[in-house]
Length: 199
Image (cartoon, rainbow, N blue to C red; front, side, top):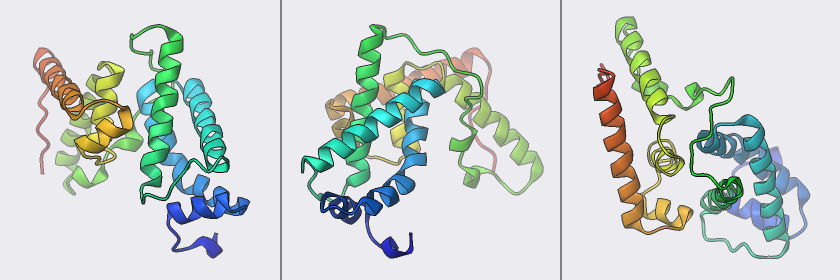
């Protein structure tokens, strides 16, 4: 909306707390696609992702209305933390640490960075295949490892930020990344997959 152009998410959140419902609509439109992509990446089931997404925004509205949000300059970080907690609650309710089966139509092509692809078609084809292989391997990682890889490489969060969002120590975040990379390398070796992109 034009009236909110140039305003930060934090300012919009505070406007909503002050009673401006349109500010929340703007916040939702700015953050929903990235937030949903994050949830979908972790749970890999569209129905579950939709439920968690809605639950996240119910909690956001509740916390905002109860004045439990303070402008720290990190609204998206705060939002991701609420989503992470909702995901963990869902996993606890499942009473299982197993990886959720990937639902039909759930592919991670929308997470691929086109910037890594070269303008030469041959390199593009090689790179596309590598990215497809990486996505397939990432789907085999445990949810905690998949989540830290997503936050680090797709959201560009620092390990300190990842630790804060997921409620674990920095060492645990680093450990999860280490095991994720070890698992990816092992899978690549087992399946004779070359992981180096061509430029």
